[in-house]
Amino acid sequence: MNVKRLTDLIAQGAVAGKRVFIRADLNVPQDDAGHITEDTRIRASVPCIRMALDAGAAVMLTSHLGRPTEGEFKPADSLAPVAKRLGELLGFAVPLVANWVDGVSVAPGQVVLLENCRVNKGEKKNDEALARKMAALCDIFVHDAFGTAHRAEASTYGIAQFAPIACAGPLLAAEIDAVNAALADPKRPLVAIVAGSKVSTKLTILKALSSKVDGLIVGGGIANTFMLAAGLKIGKSLAEPDLVDQAKAVIEAMKARGAAVPIPSDVVVAKRFAADAQATVKAATDVADDDLILDIGPQTAALLAKQLMSAGTIVWNGPVGVFEFDAFAHGTETLARAIAASPAFSIAGGGDTLAAIAKYGIEKDVGYISTGGGAFLEVLEGKTLPAFEILSRRAAQG
Image 1 (tube, helix red, strand yellow):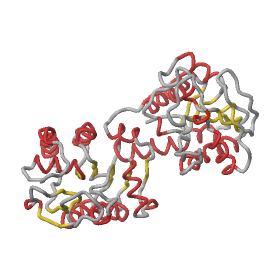
Image 2 (tube, helix red, strand yellow; image 1 turned 135 degrees about the horizontal axis):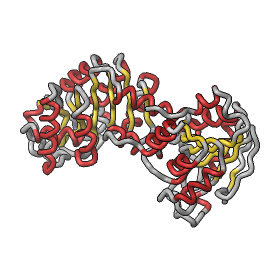
Image 3 (cartoon, one colour; image 1 turned 135 degrees about the vertical axis):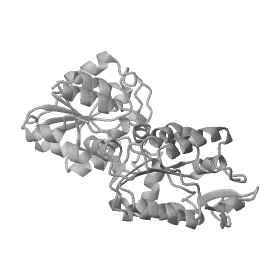
Image 4 (cartoon, one colour; image 1 turned 60 degrees about the vertical axis):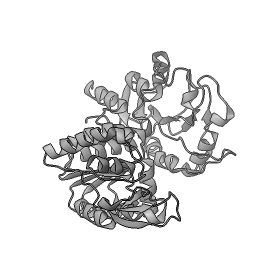
């Protein structure tokens, strides 16, 4: 995928003295008092800001925060806590500018934070008049918010249409490179782990991947539905019996290509869903009517880990068991450690996946960790994200 990159523009000397508008993802969690409780996204935005400042640009930066009502600004919607934290990270105060759509004053070497962009009327519907006003503020638009890459909004898509130059920031560029390495031109075998509570929420992903991957590992409630499709009993486990035919179709699509969806040979069950429930390992053929399947068994985990160790590329979305409960975390931990040890290029995404990566401390051993959430899932579905599409189109225009 060919897009212009901020790094390329800087190398060409095309940024000095220019007005640069960065769309970042600074949507961080806060407590009831408005204090930021986790600042990963803010810290991740700093390299792009420093890059532009060091190149001599006048920098404008904006983001959404929460779910404000357009045209009705409330103090709780303000990026003020973000401006404060950003200033601490950059080492100088970052002014917060409200009502900025009709004009912003910023000089080369300075950075200003523009108040919550989703308060602007027409933002979510990508209003053309709003997008053109935003584009008129800058010489260069930099999209550096992968978490919003699946949304065509005024500050993510419309501005990229109309700005004199539109490019990808370092975070977005890294996502593009990782997605290309994992899906567009993967080293084989390509193995995907798709897990979660429901087949219905991941059905399009499963179908899309079944035509691309060499191995498709399913876990969680999804695996239970696939076990039903394989004719196994699952007791009172979470599953979607009405989607068994869809699961069978995925299995057949994989089989037709000489690939497979491994069905668990053993599972970890309990009589109730609780952290202190007694965990029992059973053969997949021995699940009782009152059993809850809460994890894959050690034999299954070992076989899947072996498959991951011989993979060329691994895509990981979702834990394979209730890893929040230690008694039912063995399967997820085994696969996580296999991914960390595997020589394969790995890309992981999704909130629960990131939580598992953090729990087992393998951040440095995963090739790329996507923070995009919904955007990551849409990439796995085979969709072309609006941000990728418009930046690619603008690059083709010269």
